[in-house]
Every structure is written in C-alpha cells, then in structure tokens.
Length: 112
Length: 110
Image (cartoon, rainbow over all chains, first blue to last red):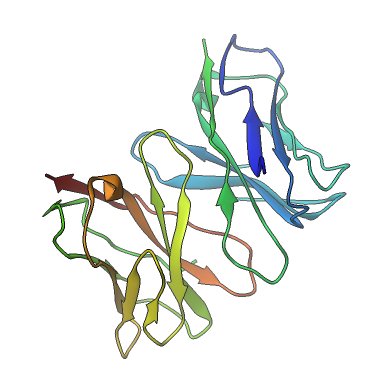
C-alpha cells in the first residue's frame, strides 16, 4: 500500500528553469493539495483540487501551475523557477466527506 | 480565516502527560479544531479533531473549552517518538483549507 508518494525527493535547479514536482496517490482520494514550507512559517497552501480537471488557488499560487488529468496524479510546475521558491513542498490528499488530510514525504527544492 | 496562537516550544519527560495549549479566540461556530503533528523530516500527520465536545483517539485526547476559545491537546504518556511540531488549526467546514500557524515544538527527554 504505497499511499501518497512524491518525486523527486530532492531537486536542485537553476533560476529560470522549469521544474515539475510529481505527486501520486493510490487511494483514489477526490481532493489533493500542494503546500510549501519555509523556515519560520507553517505550511502554506499553493493550489488544491477537488477532483480531476478541477483546481483552485490557495494562499500563495503565484509562479506555480497545476493540472489534474487523472484522479491519482497532481503535478506542480514551476514555470520559471526563482530563488524565493526554494522550499520543501508537500502534497496531500483526502477522501470526500472526510476532513483529515494525508501528507506525502515532501520534496526539497533548491533554486540556485 | 480564523487564527490560532500556540507557544513556540514545550518540554516534557518521557512517560509524563503533556498538555499542549491553543488559543483561538476568533473561532466561529462552524470551525472545527484540528491538530496535526510533524515529525522531523516528514510530512504532517493528522492527530485529532473536534467541534465542541472532548474527543479521544488512540493517539491523543482533545479538550475543548466550553466557550470554544481555547483547546488543549493531551498526550497521556509522552514517548521519544512524540517529539515533533504540533499544529493547532481551525478548519471551516465549507472550505478545504488547512491554515497552518508555526506550531509548538515539543521536546521529549528520556
């Protein structure tokens, strides 16, 4: 039972490059979320999705793009990475009618 | 979104009870109180949630004040594995957003 996985776990990229972080869940949960975590902050919501082909912005969406063509996948793309996007990124999911979210292990992204 | 206030850090000895406080004076009637914890180098993990009544599960207990302006997460016997950052979050039923604060870092000493 893999649950929710993220790849890559670690990534170093250069300013201006496009980067895609992958999130995959095996539970068929309706809802999926992307958060970022920076020192001194709790987690901040970037984007979320209530179902395939339905996405919405969170607190800090600027500079990010998401898509959800399949229920189990929710990739997050940084179209032109900036140093301020250096962070740890967490993906989460939850089933419909349940409020608890289940988080992945995170991706540590460094933009140089 | 309503906010929560937690102490930055707390300490406990192993096998002792731990009471983690949270103030949420601006809570509305439809806000659920959720607790998550984050162990080092891991994603957050759901602990417990409640609306008005006290709640118990295998991980912890949640005590909610009668006026709902504060709550306390209770770990009945702390273990070294309970060392983590604990987040108290208000979750409005009509949104799907967890608004994390900075949480309480719990240290557990043997």
